[in-house]
Length: 319
Image (cartoon, rainbow, N blue to C red):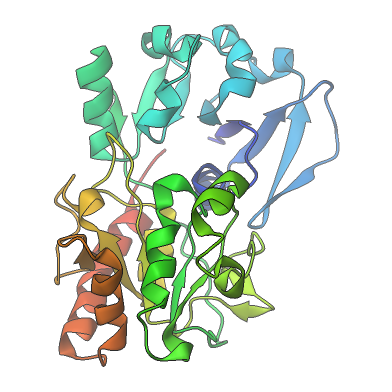
């Protein structure tokens, strides 16, 4: 049975795109977008995935439909989908916004959540039951190339990612070769207001190509990298995985996470399968202290223990 994935959102980078790609690759799905006209030719989506534009009247007639993401630009089409169509909710921000029709249509769809906290949020806020299924991870072939970087951040550059904390940590990391390099799409408003005085341009390498494995200047971005730093904090969310976390674990990197994310669940455990910061008023120093310290048995133990997490995402059955 071939599943037909429908991507109903504008972003071309970020978690929605990565999720859709992993799901598509893992289960050999077809991918579609809503277009003004139906096209026979496929277009490049990224990560080795192609998609095709279809008119909405053809989209809604597809069998085995899964809406992998939806934003406000596509709300107008939601009422056209048959009752029981699968719809993925990634985080609580998707259920905000004036005149968001999804709020009154949650019971029209079969809602799938990818973190337990999101499932609980939807139940508590809207009284709607959803199915919780962990992120699917496509175990792509790794290259033999070695990364040029000791520590990186591969998240979006944005308010909820708190990239400013990471840049402040760089000021305290003593070895220039260990400073955290930034990769990812930027929110220019956030950069202007929060990062312009923190040497952002010195450490930001831009967006990485949408490839698996992730590459920068034709080198594997994470092979032999030691730390991936992610300071995500999202109200009503956390505790579980994001693709940045899974990519790090898959490539034997140790994660440095914020306690506000970790404490929303029980998957990540401080000094067991990740490093955790956020216990003082000087979070940047906490990060720098970890990166400044020599790699030791604790580091190796954290990397090894995190492998159990990635294996469950490789083995998960969505369909």
